Length: 229
Image 1 (cartoon, rainbow, N blue to C red):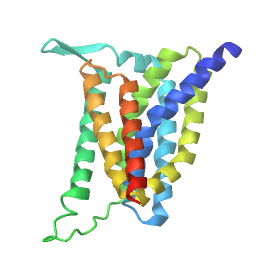
Image 2 (cartoon, helix red, strand yellow; image 1 turned 90 degrees about the vertical axis):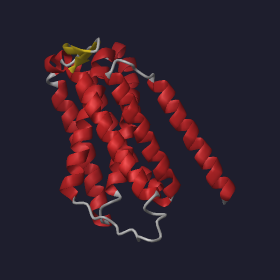
Image 3 (cartoon, rainbow, N blue to C red; image 1 turned 30 degrees about the horizontal axis):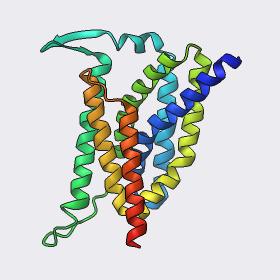
Image 4 (cartoon, rainbow, N blue to C red; image 1 turned 45 degrees about the vertical axis):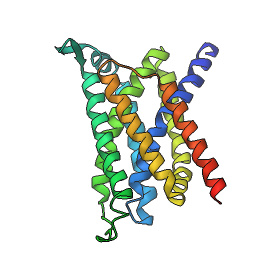
């Protein structure tokens, strides 16, 4: 029992760190909805993320097969996991680029006033589900590599999602209150998309480098915000 405590704490910490990308994505999408639907989208998105991870944990044998080579192209081996990561990375890059364009180019175009585009709850939830699938598979494969006991994996997923549920609203409010951080958050998602594609092509970028650069950029933006005031 005590031998599993350290892997459990390590896995919970890793799950929370990996879940930050998911929380940022959900927070940005929820900003497109009326105030009375934003919390609903966040809770549904994170709830489905937890359900998806728990379901995938029951399909460990199938998850492990995703690492097996499906075909080779230009001397690069492609697995099921790799194809999912590449697809998810392309989707994340597309969404981030479109959002950055709308927040910068269209907002500065005085000739054509920006008309807020209303997004439906179902459409945004579908986008969250698609990205949840990508992050869930990556998260579960990481969990399998770090822990041997199923209860440790289940517990880490449930605790991590509960933490993200409590953190999602403050993060969403912070991003909404400081528009400059929305561009920074979108840039983070753009970088995560690139890292997913790179991992799909077996060129894994150490996540420590990615999260360190994100933290550094965030601190610089905080200092700049305090200086401007």
